[in-house]
Amino acid sequence: MKKLVLLFTLLLIISCNSQGKRALVGETEYQQVLNASYKDASKSPLKKKDLKNFKGLDFFPIDSTFIVTAKLTRTENAPTFEMATTTDRKPLYKEYGKLNFTLKGQDLELTIYQSQDDLRDEKYKDYLFLPFTDNTSGEDSYGGGRYMDVMITDISEENTFELNFNNTYNPYCAYNDKYSCPLTPRKNHLDVEIKAGIKVFEKH
Image (cartoon, rainbow, N blue to C red):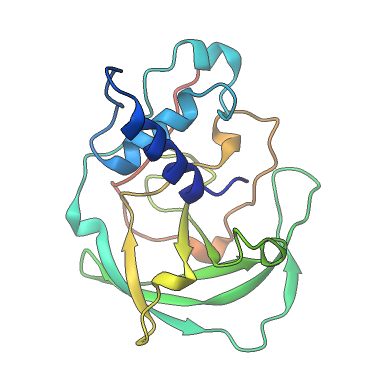
């Protein structure tokens, strides 16, 4: 699946240079650029009928309590494994480490992964992949879980970094079943409602 940060940067440059055009839809810069990418027929994962009626993705209200500091514990000598997807495709990943953080008074843990394919691409080699499900999955949010990209370069010397659940996105499979998307591992289920970030997509 395409990484979003580079796309965001390009679209921000375009939007800043576009005078007199309608403002991008969304409460935050993240939402505005994500909406712009989905509205662009050359990049959008939406089916044609959904793109025709597209007015913007649905998000939970911005909530600063879903911005937390996570502590990373690196996984030493992690084996390469084939991650299950929605198709027969088996991309290669390694467990990069465990993230521990406190949210809504609960001590939680997620496993974060590194794509072995991305390591061969200079543009994406610093990306880490964080899929998760929570107690909104299958109702207010997509049943297959949501994703977050984390940059290795954002990790501090103390092995901490900010997790912003307001800045999550859905697998492309949430919009179009022609895509092959990694399945969220069961151990990455959070027993809490993450009412922040992207909501389930209502198809037409």
